[in-house]
Length: 245
Image (cartoon, rainbow, N blue to C red; front, side):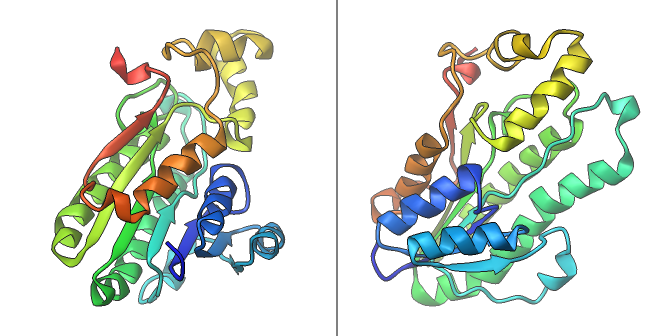
């Protein structure tokens, strides 16, 4: 994997940061893309990469972009937890923009270079919610299902050119995004925050713990490797058995 380049969105924290570190440790030159430019620069300095301070919600700046990267990790995401009747249209659109439209534009920007080289790896950090639904997450579930479809179409178009496209589908991961949900989930379910983990987040998995970011990063790194050359159009669950039900 040495001498290859990677771009990780939402790369300054959580799963993205773990992915950036793992790919850099495998010898890749990693661009850390994040709306928090300071955090992106700090991590990029630590791993010998570079930072791209970018607000992916501003999709106009992405249209017509060309990315010369060998590996694209679409990871950036946000969450809003509300019943459908209380869900603001602006929030619904914002989540679709960041988690479907932006990945589409980044894939579009990356494919020409990947096709020229005859090699490319696109890894979309989806979720168990790309395969299953949960109440109060209409926008997030819709977006992740859309990302799954985009990934599969990319796999079909990219296959003849040496480009693979796959999804990674973790359950709840120990990240700031998940920690932020606990208060919202407590309010919606009418329970104390300390009960949210056991009574809401971990009711479905057989393994009763959160996924660690580094575990997700290990799977992402494998999908980005030469060993995964025949793996494409797939969705790899890392959910402690949630989808086995």
